[in-house]
Length: 129
Image 1 (cartoon, rainbow, N blue to C red):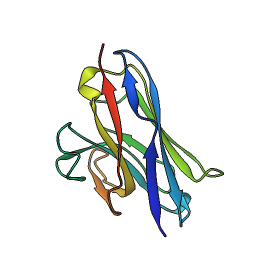
Image 2: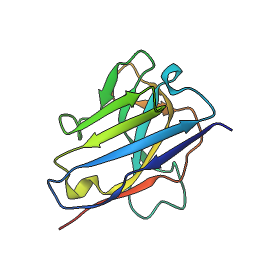
Image 3: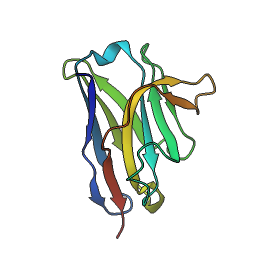
């Protein structure tokens, strides 16, 4: 069964860091682009609705970031663990959201990402003092 499972969210103070994980099963991640998306609080019962593309890593290793997270977030892949990570630093209250990962096409503009797999459960990130 093809599946992506997000984890690593939590409550963190402004300025803090978190590392999100996107673990794949049933397929090999390195053959696919992977996108991280986030959804504002209140919409979790509707995965995929009104999501914002945060970062994308194409199958060739190219990485892309939304302007709002550029310089603060880093996407990476561990082929041995079949997992993609999103390292988030200098977190701000406006980063509060449910974060999802999907297989994705990274748009040529570097800012538009097209999910190509089903939405999972996501992982909640809350940035608050």
